[in-house]
Image (cartoon, rainbow, N blue to C red; front, side):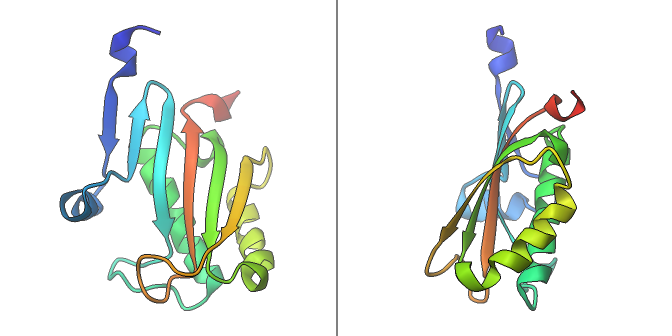
Length: 138
C-alpha cells in the first residue's frame, strides 16, 4: 500500500458535524480500507434517548450504518464490535436480539462491557466498531 492510500480521513456525515465542532472528535476515521467508528448511541434527531434498550439499540445501529455508509462501507464490512452497557446483565438478551437483525450472519467479533454511565442521561448503551471497507463482499 502506498502512502497516498494511507491518507487519514475524518468522517462526519450530516448532522454529526456538531460533535466534531463542539467535542472535537470524528464519527469515524478512515485510513486505507480500515475504518474506526466512534461510539454510536441510542438517540434520535432531537438528541432524546430511546425509551428502552431495544429502541436505543436500533437507533445506535442505524447511526453506525449511516457513518459506515459515509465512509464507503456497510455493516457487512464490520469486523469488530465493542458495546458498552449500563445495565449489562438485564439488557444483554434484548440487545443481542436487535444486534442479530443487523448482523444476521458472518458475525463480527464482539466485546460487551458493563459500565456505570454514559455521556448523556438516560443512555443505556454505546456501540463502537472497526470495519474493513469491501471485505463484506467477499
